[in-house]
Structures are given as structure tokens and as C-alpha cells.
Image (cartoon, rainbow, N blue to C red; front, top):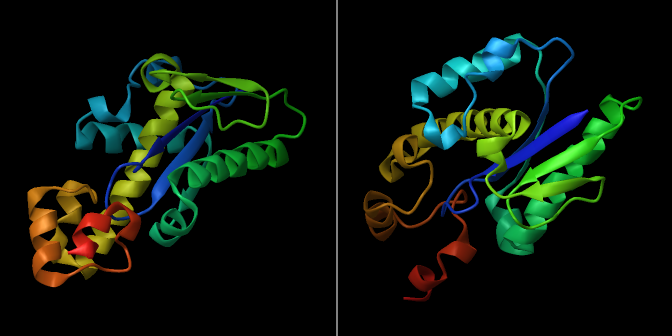
Length: 190
């Protein structure tokens, strides 16, 4: 079983970091695989459509996330390692009779199981592409829900990234429990 792993939300100043591991069940439709791309290269509507197809066709996937508080306390690298380990363990538990091989998008090896890292894996490996799409959709839905609570920050459109509107809102309204204080040290020190 090849399991692709990708993360979203590493760089935003608010919201969690989310990682997904994904693998295809036997007989997964090739025409759906052919539509896959890195989530950043798909329009929002196409990403939703493909995420729905992946789920309807029983993609095996596991999500793991770290909250802004965990990112502040542990650091982003520790959080990413923990997410990868959670995904590995969950796949080993859910599919104990499979031979697992993990492909982690990127160049930092957080894997504890057999596998490899691959730069641009989310552009080259279908399992990483699927993981990228599922993780992005999950995090975008979460940020949209948080936007309904705090609409002034524009999380429905900026996904928690540090846009001008977002920084302006911080200047006017301050920070929330959803903000990553460790990513805002310069603002908090003034």
C-alpha cells in the first residue's frame, strides 16, 4: 500500500496545520486519478468536486492536525512530525495486513516507517495529490467556519494567511485564540 502524505497550513498566521495521508483502495477508478493535481493548482470548485469524488469512491485517508496553541508551544516542526506519526500509526492500525510504503511531500523526513520524502510529491504522486486535496478542503472548511465567528479577519478568503486585510484586522481588533502567537511575535512586541 502506497500512502501519500501532504500538509496544508504550514505558513498561515492563524488556524491549525493539517496533514493528510491517502491511499487508493483496490480498483479505484483511473479516470478520477487522472483528474488529480496538487490542490494549489485546482480552482476551489474543482477541488471540492474532486474531494467529493475521492470520498465517494472510498479513498483511504487519515487527517491529523495541530492547533495554533500546539504550534506555539511545540513549534511547527514538532507538530508536523507528530501529524506524520499519527497518520502512519493510523494506517498501520486500519490496514494491519498490508505492506506500507509512505511518500511524504517535501524535503524534511518526519517518517518513522518505511518510505521516502519527495520534493513536489504533490505534483508527481497521485496519493500525495489526493492527500493534498483532502487536507486543503478540510482546512478551508474549518477556516470558513471560524470566519463566521470572526468575520473581520477574512479567513473565508485568506485561509488564515497574513494578508494586508488580515494584518489590518489584527491592528484594529487584536488577536484571537485561533492566531499563532509565535508567528506574530513582532506585532505582539510593539
